[in-house]
Length: 508
Image (cartoon, rainbow, N blue to C red; front, side, top):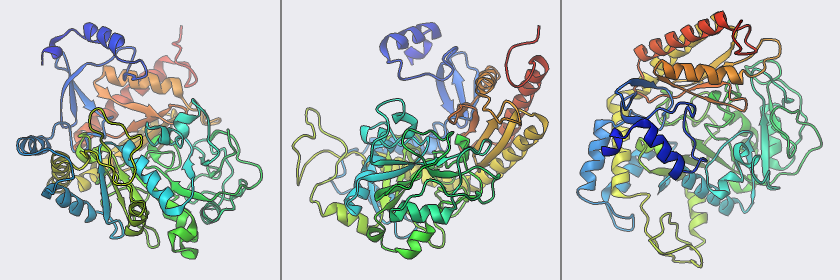
């Protein structure tokens, strides 16, 4: 605790000296020094209390006593790798299996969402025998090299798009700039190897123009998708729950359902290997956040499993451990057996002084992804979700928050749209209704002012103009009232002092 007593300026100076500037701070112009947190609140070195609308990783609340207790008690007894028999790993796998479609019955435990996504990519490629991957524009899948390659959010600023990566263009609801194929036609074309880039048709349930389509290499989502068809035989169709498919990123999020994208080819080609593609789903809207059954929210409809739709692989990140380093991959027996048939043992933690080079069949290494402590923490998180009925809580509070934010849309022209599910909500800020131009500068200003009013909120989307609400699940009705009241006051103040929504320059 001694470091918590260090003056904020000293801490900042040390960080600037010791920590890479690539590891960015929230509110860099005036960072918040956080020394403790509890539930949906965070506290700075002066004892000021902030309402946390950012940290979805603290899924059931910061420092939840039952989760902390579970980690502490198991740490006092045993923490070792998964090569030894222990009850917690099988108990945790069983509990997770009860929240998923029955086909997803084989589990791998890891240390991070990036590791989970990397393994999912390997599983898909082993099973299908193909290299190519279809991803959504602006998606981010993790920090490993294999995942940067399939993350448009990152690779466009690095080495660019690889030949085997195919980006599905998803237009913003407020701008709607890409041409729109029908879901069934696009699904069929993507998975059967005939991918037209120019298929007209409206997005179900949305405005006339927003759309998705396979973008030409080098295009961004704001450009029209045109050109000739391209052959795509892919290993994985990978819509991520935090990707543009999702409302918080300021993208589609209305009307379209993932099972619609996959229904046609799955009816025609029930066997995954015949379809030449596996469907991977990354869970970022974590278990219970939208009070839908099953527990895992992967679709705008809130359903992981539709009538004809079950993913082949699901990955889960550290929110399943409330921030503890644990992650999971769930898959089917056929996919897992194809991977096992290689004879290469899977591991994700290497003992000190050893590398992966040269390891072949029968490779040995420590595996802490399914350690007794990690699994005990994961079990505790599931217990809290059930005990505190957080799924129902997320629906109740999320609906109330959406209603309050919807009132702000009526009152303030800068609010172009409000969309979301449960406690996963995006507020789209625009400069004016005619052009629907993203209000990037205004969003940054608003977030900074909210911080001054003890509300922590972040922005997202290609234009960084989406206010992204993803608080811990214990976020309350009273919290919703407080946050929206402060948001309303700041927007009203902006409208009184600013010439228009196009600039934050004050009137003379």
